[in-house]
Length: 61
Image 1 (tube, one colour):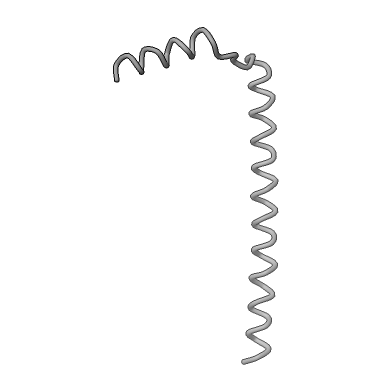
Image 2 (tube, one colour; image 1 turned 120 degrees about the horizontal axis):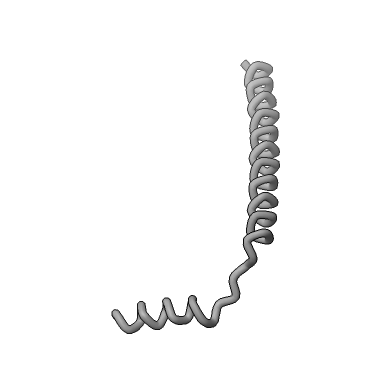
């Protein structure tokens, strides 16, 4: 098990290509923006559907 962990760290140090800091910042910003937009879209759809269901139940009661 210890050898596996050592080999894993060695692999990460020598054989993995890491993203540059500027590209990492840019991609993180893109993920944050799309996460906010997606959450706003879900919130909007939830609000509309909630009002539609309330209106429907008011009509039938």
